[in-house]
Every structure is written in C-alpha cells, then in structure tokens.
Amino acid sequence: MLNTQHLITFKALVETGSFTKTAKILGLTQPAVSQHIQKLERDLGEPLLIRHGRTTEMTSAGEVLLQHIEELESCYKGFIVSWQSYMANKDQDMYQTDKSA
Image (cartoon, rainbow, N blue to C red; front, side, top):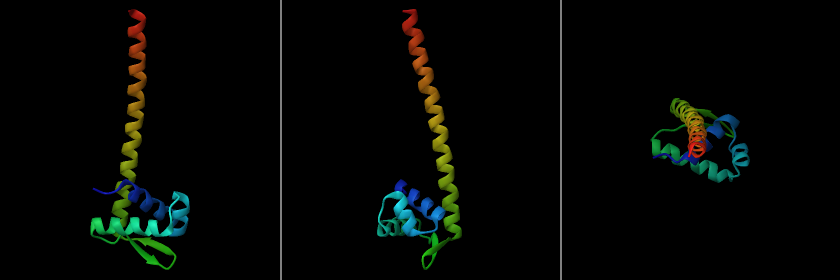
C-alpha cells in the first residue's frame, strides 16, 4: 500500500517543481522529500520524475500517479460532503425524535 504522506509529497513536488520549496511547504527536510519520492518509485517499480539539477519533470508513470492522486482527492472530498450531510440529517432526526418524545 502506498503511503499517503508520500503521495502528498509527490503532488506538492509536481506543483512546486522544487525539492526545496516542497520541503518548506510541507515542513519537511529536503532529504525527507527525496526519500518520499524514492520510496514511491521503489514501491511502484518505475521512475516518477526526471531530475534536471534543481528542477524536475514528470515521467509518464508520474503523470498516471498524479491523475490517480487527484482522483483520490476528489473521492475524499465527495466523502466529506456526504458525511457532513449524513451527520446533519442524523442530528436533525435526533432533534425531531427528542421533540416528539
């Protein structure tokens, strides 16, 4: 199973294009960011980025991973909306039950 923090790190790195900026944004060290990416690449068995000095470029495997990370985020956001609706309805149902008792 892939580590959620490593996925967050990968997405942030793609967005910033910089290991140093990613580390700063996520409150990590630059070596920790590198380690997260290396672990993802090892777990997936494919390079995700091509490093050009201080910048990076996504490989096709990286593009596939990024697409799935974005789908996971969308799914999670949908769950949160559903959960909030469920809790609001649950609270309403409890209030109506209390009123009728």
